[in-house]
Image (cartoon, rainbow, N blue to C red; front, side, top):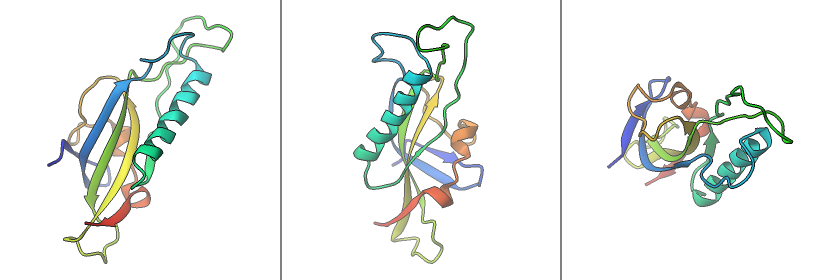
Length: 143
């Protein structure tokens, strides 16, 4: 049973099998959100997903970065990522058409950011998430 289904821009339906959410800046004890901190955060999230979910490829949806009119400090201007980071295990039918659809599926681990802690669903999911190029990124596997 899936948590939700998302219709990608390619019209492929993918199922969200597992979802982990956390606060983007929940562990930030010092400093302020800036390019340096955000770049480290994004790289770390991708590495963590690759280690945790080694059974499928990992794709990072490039996050939107906002620059509020607040003065920065020694690390440059304030740069803010959306407040919720998500890591999802997605599954769909096999990518390779020659594979038996009863015995094969495809999988992709996706890391993305969003502004609210909602489960993405249907055609209302974030356009960046719906724009994933599944056929290029996902990996087929046998059940």
